[in-house]
Image (cartoon, rainbow, N blue to C red; front, top):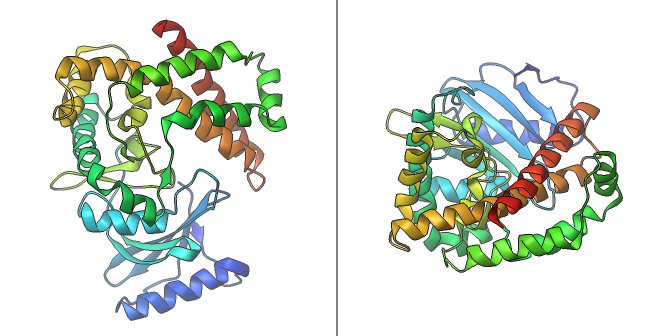
Length: 321
């Protein structure tokens, strides 16, 4: 990840953020030892690292997009109910979507072994299961509500927008009523298992997880929402079919055995695959429509992710028939 010094010649919101950081750190009795370093600066948000006498402190500002959570508010709430499983929040300005957090170490390596995924995903399932009783407060904190019931309607709207329609045409992707009818069938099948909505990370991969001395910590909550738990299965579904993958899924599903017996959970997990892909197709479509401040490479990356998940959705829907 590229880093650069935070210029003294800041303007606009970044200058306000610098003053807020300095004043907040003083109130918290943190003494800066150097100027902030820009870790990330793009249209989805900024991350700055501030060296202090008590270690690095991180500032994050998240963009306000239609399907993004208020990450500052969500993190602040999660830090209280899942201490040690999310970054320690030092301060927030919820209205401006700003937060200061303690350093929590390095994320997992992108080619980490599936055994590590197994352990981390098991912990994540525990968090999701416990979050069921907190869904109202999660929404109040700034977490999006993204019921699977609304997926088809939302996809229709996004697919009909000129920017998305142009992508579909350019990639020779045919979108028709039959496609959406099949998705509706899969959503209905999944709803019949009556698993409760809960906290969903929305972008759960190894680069958004860190290993701690006691467990695992999860960060980058901009895509956080309340919806069906298996919407965080998008990477697992795409792993190669191995015994280790099946063990991973079985261990994760054990967190939901107080709702359904094991065989029913397995069936629900299978039924959720196309719905999960639809959820992430929608996420990327929304980002593309709101990427006016993004550079060409960023938009291209999101376009590739959008078309990849749409392809996964189409293929999974066919397999379910």
